[in-house]
Length: 443
Image 1 (cartoon, rainbow, N blue to C red):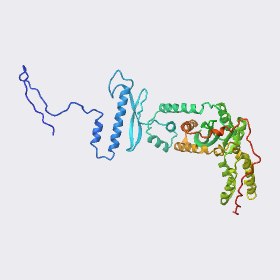
Image 2 (image 1 turned 30 degrees about the vertical axis):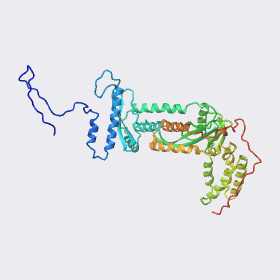
Image 3 (image 1 turned 60 degrees about the horizontal axis):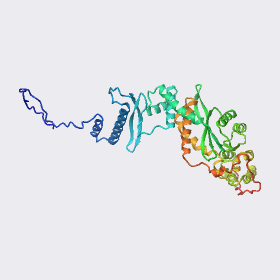
Image 4 (image 1 turned 90 degrees about the vertical axis):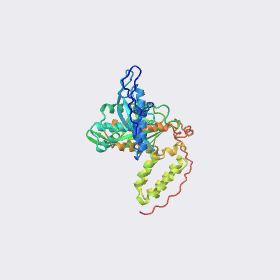
């Protein structure tokens, strides 16, 4: 209980008859509770709540941010000060994952300049691009219920067109600078692969091809060198893309690895003189086994794989023809397919043995394509092609930066074996090491 106030009459000299009220209540005047400390005191009073520690952490971090902003502005909240540099402009919601659980914070915004606390990690370019795509779809009036839920979950309700335009412009500048950068030096190996995405076009939903190009330079480093969006994979599409790569400086390409596309083969001949096309071995095996009954696929696959264990190009060629002749009797279409695909599937065997494990297929692009699809599935249907370039380009930019921090993708010693002016050498005296395949049983 507080001490009662006592009224003690006191007559100072020369002032008789006046009464001065004195309080004997213990009221410390030093270190008064500030406005910042009151939320913590209120939380301490709720020590029985399950989320007590998380609430305290949120309050402490909020106080830190408010103090930082006051220092930047030069004035406190509602304080009139001629020395202030800017004004507050509301908050943006951010979530910080901790061992206590997710902390829901409100990051102060400024009218001029920006503020971001050091204990929060800024959004990566990919996250910004994803947010921009969802925002753009929402504002354009083409959002679905799924997109609306995502917008609300990200705390973006009530966003303005100017905010979206600013965010998109920032991402687009970085992505375009990355995709249009000059390509210096020589790039002996080039991988091309496509993934299909859905986009709204003229009131319809159509599929478009997103072609991604990855190349390795003479230092053994791999980089993402291009992205192209188009309606199909016809020859004009491939030609336009490859010419854009050559214009940016892609030179010295010896081998182009991709799936079987007639248009691509014609485009390579037009734009990259001296380059050889390598048909993806994985895709070829799928096409080959489609001509065989399911019960015989294991035996046939084992027979064809005997070709790929040969030590050189000559041995692989001889083994290929031997296996094709064995399989031709039972499956004529398979034999015809192997005759037509021999040069394309075995092209990689004429290159340095140190590099062959990464040259026979488009597998180096598969993981990248899966990441693109994973992020794109969140959007579902893109509002336009520009939004595809924005999101996919940001993913590629982020992945390319990660690759530059890793070890060389290919051994540099193998690069010394490449001679840009010499054709692949084939040794005619090599004898293939063939294990006769088991005799297929009747289906």
